[in-house]
Length: 155
Image (cartoon, rainbow, N blue to C red; front, side):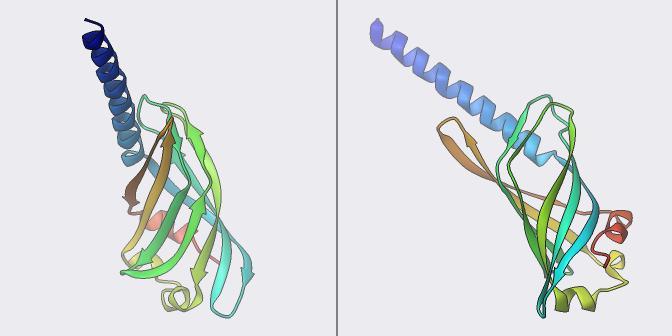
């Protein structure tokens, strides 16, 4: 009898973790990303460093405990640059502005200067989550609108 009770408790705890993980994955996959603007910090021969502002909205009823997010922005499958967003919490149906460092390739940037919004721009990202004793990674992507792109990467 005790074994059945212990097994039932173990299954209940494992099931609870599975539900929480599923809800975190769902919230991350449905995260709205609005690329707002960028500010040039420094320019070297091969790359430029920007501070990028993004507005994130959690469209789900679950608190989103986002880990460190590594992201890359590509233009026509060429890597424009990459950045990292520090870990953050986003409540249910909450929005937040986040800033991150973004390192842009000067060659790719100059190639598309003035016509960036007329090309295929895609943000791909991967968030590393740590939930209690479980770690997992969730990939997601975003296709910014031409209006967002026009405000982005302007020097």
